[in-house]
Image (cartoon, rainbow over all chains, first blue to last red; front, side, top):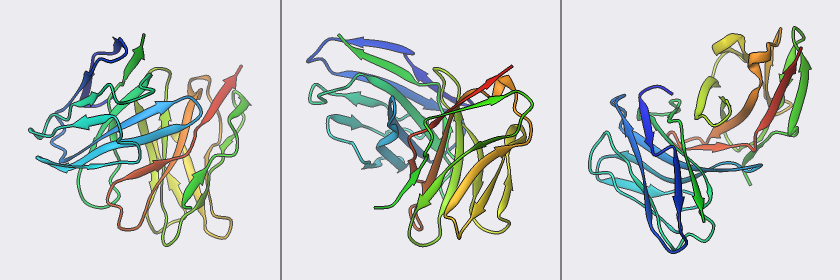
Length: 113
Length: 114
């Protein structure tokens, strides 16, 4: 999984709690991404960031928040407003510029109890 | 709506036989197409991409894909399948001017049997 780490690997949350998923990369990539993976639906983009201190909503941003204070780090917070948060969450990074491939972390499996 | 489609949820192949995982696209302008592979409970790994040029693209682990504009397809192929190729395969695209924002198909589970 290259130089991208995600923690924790498994996360359990009670309904109504916010949780933060960590993503760190040492690839010196400017761009970072968060995806959600559900069975049979492929990956859907939650948020992405092309540069430090800037980020954009993806296709399913509601109920999630991010920050990008450092180039290496792009944490994702799953808030209590996310109605169905149980899923596999994947972080990725890439060089900026057009059509560069993304490198993925190993993922965090979030389960709401 | 612009999209990629993977018409088969699962493909079964005997080891040593050629394999094909299908992908068709519906994208305006020039499509920029990718294939990724995911092993169980792992992140995705990049296999190959088509941006421009030669329609036959060679990638990692002996995989290749052929871009066919008339059939709007980008099928993934390998001449001789291995049991270790068993995984979930995703086709994806980037829109013209879309930077590196990928949109994925729903995935195809490949099972290679002895």
